[in-house]
Length: 176
Ligand code: SF4
Image 1 (cartoon, rainbow, N blue to C red):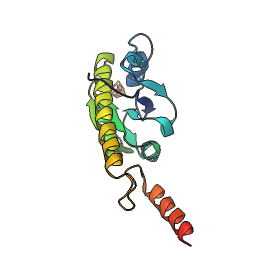
Image 2: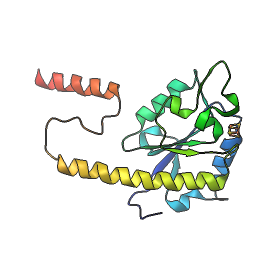
Image 3: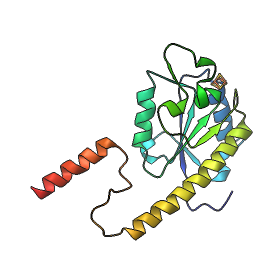
């Protein structure tokens, strides 16, 4: 893994799973495997998170939750699907209420297969996520540097359609 400038904060969300992958994620994050030695910090706050780690498949009830968590995270961000259920729906794939894997709802950057995914594989996924996050952060910083002081193009920090509407409202109020 290359040098990283920031310690990304990691948010874990469990979709509709058997909890097997969650136990492995917890083992990975806690001192047994100690993912924090690679610079990540576990958080429960999407507003502060840089990496979203999803276990379990997506159903009609949890899809809006996953979407909201993703939208609340600032850019740049990276999403990791952990386990066969999060990658494709797994053993729950044919259930009447399932939409599929995590990529049925949010864009996934890294897939960690396995039923359950082993801590070594999860650790590998985290390291890839940290590298990708660093790359995106550098691109983001470069964009900001090149467009400093410019009015106009869409701010890459705007995450959601809701934020865009809010920005337009604020601009309208300022112009009035
Ligand atoms: S991939 Fe296997 S262990 Fe992981 S949540 Fe699905 S069924 Fe459980």
